Image 1 (tube, rainbow, N blue to C red):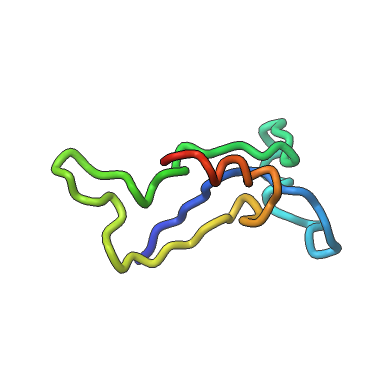
Image 2: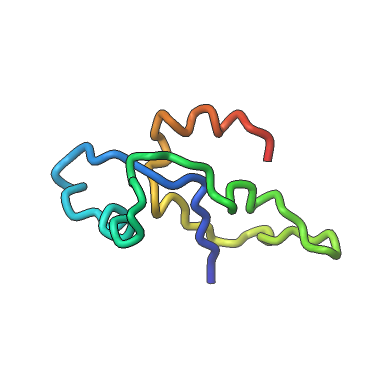
Length: 84
């Protein structure tokens, strides 16, 4: 199994490959602007602990990331500097 982790949400269409992006289509259903990059509630997921003090994401867990953004998008640079 694995864990999906989206640190931020939002992106910009930069190439032909972005023409039919599911993120833009899905956001349109909720009248959300996909060009606005925002930090998600799961931003600090890998460093969270449960009530017993165990890591919420255990060591060796396969992580899929950035399904709703571009990891290298410039607007996220300021978010990278924030503490978890």
